[in-house]
Length: 253
Ligand SMILES: O=C(O)c1cc(C(=O)O)c2c(n1)C(=O)C(=O)c1cc(C(=O)O)[nH]c1-2
Image (cartoon, rainbow, N blue to C red; front, side, top):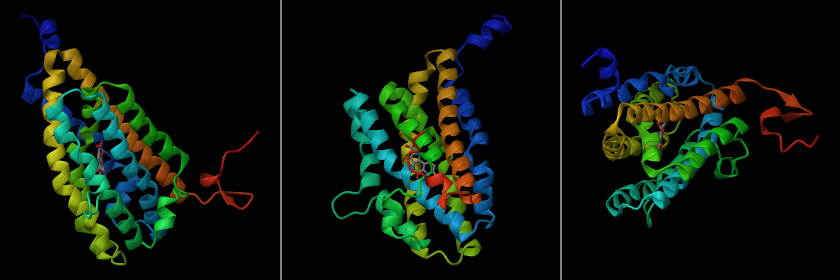
């Protein structure tokens, strides 16, 4: 077998997983805004801006997972996947991730209304998050499952916040960390399922494996653009007619 032919063979399951994990080099943990957050360099207003904007991602996740379920004919996959929705929405009296995120808002000094009104959400964040939901609506369920694999890298960023915030931002109330503590275990469980589906479905050819890497890159880009938009919205104080430029309603020309 010559070298060219070898290039076209699918990677082994282990090699493929390694390639997916290598994508972690582009995770938003390395975005300047998240680096500043970890290093304690954000102001209270910047952290509030991040919490209010990220809420738009939080409420999108169950809708994205609902879209995956609607495209998935496999009962066994659905039985596991549905837990992702209740993780965020809650079940009965058990508080879910969305409510925990509102509590994070309170811990950084935002009211419930500040958060749920979405009035602080920048257009760039809306655009990026909506692209994630649309991807899940339009693509096969396996491709959408693959796009969730940024969660491979999420426990690291959650752990960073749990470790650094008490020292770097002592003014944040302790309940603010509840969401991240909750996600540590949930994300590890989610990743096992997502990785298993991806390694099975995309392993039929090198071309399919490359497609999976592209999908993961698409999702990394979404997270990166969310951080870009939040950084811009929270760093620049641009006013037009006395109103914040980033929160302008529709402008009619
Ligand atoms: O705080 C973060 O940096 C971060 C990143 C990600 C991610 O990597 O997509 C998720 C979360 N948090 C998260 O809390 C969460 O519930 C979640 C679900 C998903 C997904 O794609 O289904 N990603 C993430």
